[in-house]
Length: 566
Image 1 (cartoon, one colour):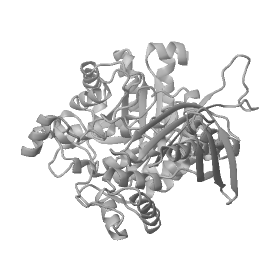
Image 2: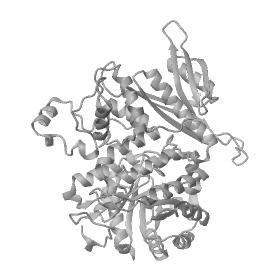
Image 3: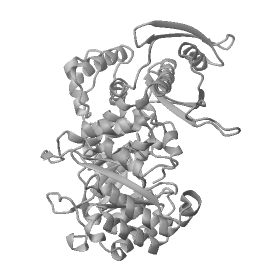
Image 4: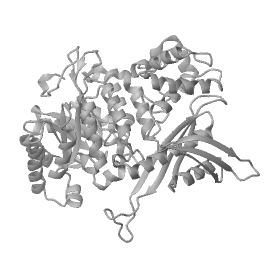
C-alpha cells in the first residue's frame, strides 16, 4: 500500500509506511458498557493516559447526553487537548485531537462545539443512520430527507470548526449505492473524515473489506478524505473486520482499550495495534501508539470501569504470556520465539528480576514501579509503599502481580464520598454472620454500623447500606486470586443496580420501567472480606456521586436514552 492508492495519511514513520490513525472512543462508546460509569476525575486520568499512549484522536464523550458529559469533554479539551507530548521516538508531538459526538441536529452540534472548542485540535463527529431498518423504524425519515439532513448538518458543523467527521450509522447494513450517495454529499458539505460503522457487528471481514474498497472506488472525493472504521464485536469479528478495512485502504480505526463497549464491545485497541506491529510485513502500515503504554492503559481502564480483563484476553490478559504445558515450556527455554510471537516488554510488562520483601526500601520499590511502567509522584509513592510494607509483613515475597495490584488500588482511586476505616466480621456454621463496619465521611466524621446477612460479605454490605442510606441491588460478585498460595491477594469485582427514581424532568408513565443504572467497584486485599468491602463501597461511592454531582451523570443510561449506537 502506498500513497498512490489514494490514501492521505497525516504522517509517516521513519520507514516510510503509511500511518493508520488511532481514534480512541473508550470515553464515549466504551463507557456505554453496562456499569462503566466514569466520574469526571476518572475521565481526565484516562484521557491523560490515552495521550501518553499516543492515540491520535480522543473521542471524549457525547456532550448532548448530559451536562456532566459536556463538562467532562470541555475539561479534557482544555487540558489534555492543549498539552504537548512526545511521540514513540521521543520527538515533540502535538496534543491529540479532541472529538465530541453529536447527532445530526443543530443543538447537538452546538453543544459538541462548545465542549471541544478549547482544544488546540478540535473535531466534531456527527452521525445519521443510513440503513433502511434504521431510517424506517428509528428516524422515520425517507432517503431524500436523510440526504438533505446530512448536507445541512455537516455544513453547519463545518461552520464551527474545520475538522468534521461524519458517520453513516449502521453502514454495514445500508444499501451500498445509497451509502455512496450520502458519503458524497457529506464530502461536498465539508467532512474531512468518513467513518464507516458496523454498528451491530453484522458484517464479515470479506464483506466489510469489500465495502471499504467500494467506498473508495465509487464515492467521488473519497481520495481527499480519511476513511475510518468503527466495528462492533457482536459476532467476535470486530478486530478481523478492522484489519480487513485497513487492508482495503482505510487509514483511521475507531477502537477502545480492552475492547469495552455496549453489548459485546468494540474493536480492541491493543489487539489491532499489536497485529499491525507484529505482522508489519503483511499490512505494511504503522501507528503512532507507544506500545509500552498498552499494559498500563489496560489496567487503568479496567480499574476505573470495574470491567475485569478476562485471563485469556489477547495481548493484555493474565495468561497472554504464560506457558504451562511442558512442551511449550521446553520450547521457550530453548528459544522464546517457539511459542511467543511478541515480547511482553513491548506492551509494557516488566522483565525485572528485582524481588521485593519486607526488608526492601523505598528506593527499590520506586525502581520496581518504574520498571513496571508506573510514574509515581512522592505522595503516590508514599501511599503505595506504605501498603507494600503492610503486605510484606504478611507475605515472605511480594510478587510483581502483588505490586501491580497495590499500585492500581492506590493510584486509580475513584471519588470517595465515604472511605473504609475498619471491618470486623464474625461468622461460622452455627452463628448468624455479623459485621461491624466503620466508615469516614468526606468531612472526617466517623460512622459505625452493624449488619447481618446470609454470609460475611452480605453482612458487610448490609452494614455499608445502613451507613450510606443506599439500597442498590447486588447483581454481580466475582473474586479471583491475583497470585498463587494461601497468602494470595484477592481481587473482588462488584456491580450494583439502581433504578433511577422518577422526577419532574423525567417522569415515569404507568407501566414504563425506570432507567436502569449500573455501578461497578473493585477492591484488592489479602483478606477477601476486606477486598469485598472495598469493592462494594467503591460502587456505592459512584452511585452517591452520580446523584449529587452533575459531572458524574454520564451513565450509560443517559447515552442509551439518546439512541446512540454509532
